[in-house]
Length: 373
Image 1 (cartoon, rainbow, N blue to C red):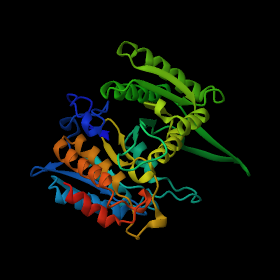
Image 2 (image 1 turned 180 degrees about the horizontal axis):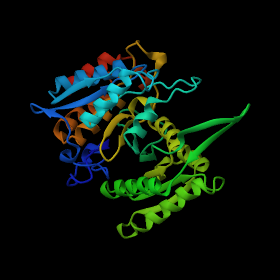
Image 3 (image 1 turned 90 degrees about the vertical axis):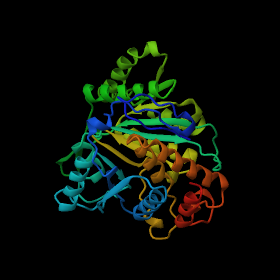
Image 4 (image 1 turned 120 degrees about the vertical axis):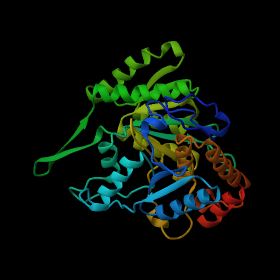
């Protein structure tokens, strides 16, 4: 179960029964966001993404239509190969600027294409969508090796190794700069502690490699420690863990984690480990939050090109991300209805996709969710 997702400046709505975060800090209210709304419907930017993106996005649109959700989609079929200067790239960015809220699938980033900026990285830096939130939690009806797993991964989106500052100083010698600033580290640390406070979480763990990167990760760790002092009266425990030890602890005793905060690269890796603990990338929802914009996408970033077009993709991750988006827009009743329908579908076990050990298609899973609305 996931807890409801709301903006920081709104009253905290107790919806723990639904399992989504009750509140995420540092997110403006609807009026502050000035979300595009016409005729009682919100306009939301939709970027289906590469691989299975079109199939999972179709599932979300079908379920929303069946549930009469007051959403109008403004779809842009950007791909991971779209260049930053392309018209489609610019149109998609302008759409998000206009609508303030987006639902996005995963975009493929070419590995060996020099000079090609990742759309995922570019959009977070251009719009200062600085906080990534990924929710790792067991789902009833989908048994895995570990039980009672329930933690949140919060990563800084705009700095670290993903700053994209690389150059070849000499043939065969490449220098890649890792950027860490006190200002942005403090911002993400406060986001993590506010999230913990508003969602009745008990502990925040800073994940780092300060034993080796004493300046960069040392600044990140020490800043988190300083921020932790401001929350001592709230009773939230703080600890830290070196990232390699964290990886071992995740696969041996994941129940010890509650809220985790870390730089960009570590968050990417830890999110994938977390996904494997509870069943894989097909069920992990996520959100990327800034002061002005909110972008919702699966928390584990796999495009699924190997199963593209086979009608076997699990749409749960994108559906749950869309449910988080509905809570963000104040459409909690629709969100809870869809969330409960997905949970009921998985508990029933009759429409499990291959990644969950079943044989059902994406279409059948979608129809089962609709039947449980």
